[in-house]
Amino acid sequence: MSPPTADSQWPLWEVFVQEKAGAPHEHAGSVHAPDGELALQAARDVYARRGPIASLWVVESERIVATTTADAASFLEPGPEKLYRHSRFYSGPKARKSK
Image (cartoon, rainbow, N blue to C red):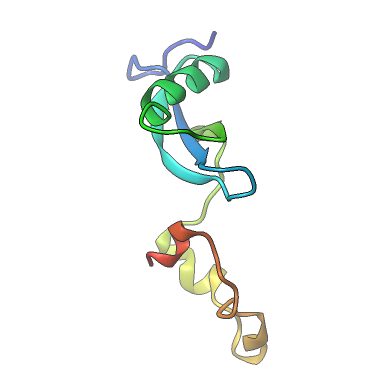
């Protein structure tokens, strides 16, 4: 069991749900828990109580490595000579389509 963080709360875990087998896992929210097993139980109690879910994933928020919006131009945009690398023809998960 991990000790509480400096702000006296358990670590934050991000929750991803898969609504049916074969569907992509999508971010549903987050929970505080001392370890992964209790995070799964908390996620089940919060995010799976209103309908059937095929699978749950939890990942400690501190373990996620991500870019910031300030990085978008320099890190995510293709160079002008490599527009073919742009993913405009890719149909992504619902979370990306809301952009």
